[in-house]
Image (cartoon, rainbow, N blue to C red; front, side):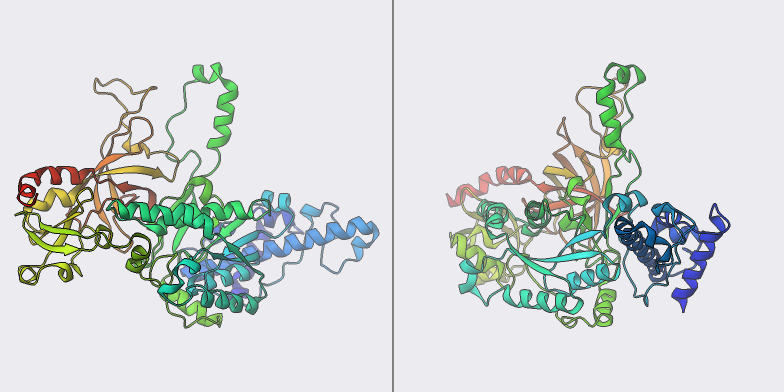
Length: 566
């Protein structure tokens, strides 16, 4: 009933704003952006978020129906122009222009609560002359299954893809087959709504781009993040290469994150002056065209625990331009309820745990299979005393407390709690301390160097740029200068956000910098990703990787105590 009422309001608004007093043209309807319907009707503040979503979905369905009708009409006209006037599709015969013909708007099917999806402008619809096509990444979990069903109800033309990236041949001896159950679940989910499912094997690409990275970082004593690399290099990387040429408009996934269009020239520097533009008009024409493309902004999901923007923080603009996150604005509890409402075959399936490529395999078992053991000493960071023995640097990370007691001498554990505070890969040493909360470790837990910074907007935000040089002159041309800026940050996946300052040090593109946190962090592990956010914590700006450079000072200070064990 409510859906009919919203549709009636929409019809009344269209009718009253139509340039003709007798008809509503298809062009008029197609020109509306679905996500702005609630604002057009002045209902956004009155309706709940779910109802606003439903209103947007109604508009999406109506536009899809119009598109289908106009496509069918054009096809029939090609066969017999004389049959147009007898069409039973309610197209007004007073118009001869297919794009502007009046139609009888049909009410949509019973409305389910649905997520925002990027709107398609009338120009996109007229150019493609087809339903928007989506390559849906399906894992067998509840999240991606709900995302698939949302897109299906929004009338997208979907092909689901199951990515076979687990190394079952090499890791099968460690556990059950980690992918077979997932694939069978995907088949059931797709069969329910008659969506085709394809399997693409990316095992070799995954081994080259993610497994090798993980092993290399772990062997160096660093803390890798395979999930970040999986998203940037595989799911939104080589998967794009695999489906290239098949004409998919979008790639969708079940990630908890949101994408919105930024403003034109959002966060860009000022354009060159008119004299410079006249000197190189052709080049600036191309620059202007590029600047008119709306940048995608990556926003956090409203569920702080499930938000996955951290794992997506290394994606580029080019990658994000094609992405849909259908469940991005939902709480996890709402997604679970949608799974029940859709009666999904996997509605009661528990959430997966562990890393994207391991499935049921434990990370330590994975590292053991590839790196084996390389024993070394555990040293008291304050005294240089050997207090235990480890089996390999890669089994421990900075800030670790849980499990460290198992590799310490029994008489030492009573003096805890002990924390891993640093690693020396050259000598296979792990430094531990029972004074981790004391002032002596304040600098090691608040100040660090970050490298390999990747900005989602293809460049550092303007508030990190210094507009004037040290002499007070305008800093135009040449190498940019940077100033300290405040940011929200995530040091690891989860709800915790910390504030601090970033001062970029790379003079060319801002790819490295120094960070100072307002409060001590639990463990700043080299190799770990840091995601940058605006100060409201909402928009993800990019990410960087913690360098082991801040270990250097600590290890240098430890040389005196290390001499006792040489």
